[in-house]
Length: 110
Image (cartoon, helix red, strand yellow):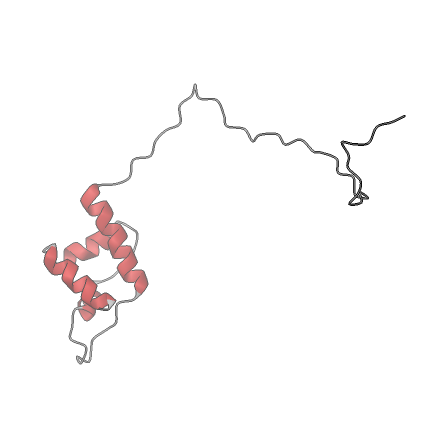
């Protein structure tokens, strides 16, 4: 099943007209004409058939989500919430010339 088939099946299942699909694509700032859209719904042997690309289908699906659910509401940050700060990391000195037999915890000064 290719992108054209998916687009056709969604169009039939959701009872969408070409102008409604164009409006759905406008919701995600993707501009397409009804003529270009009609080329996706033609038979593969038709001279004006055009293959539906991944970008068109992806934008249609994203627009369909907005169309069905509504626009995403932006949450405003609370004023009383403290600003998240990065945890401060402490540097631990590493002795580079340790040998296998040397154990830092066993050494005592005399």
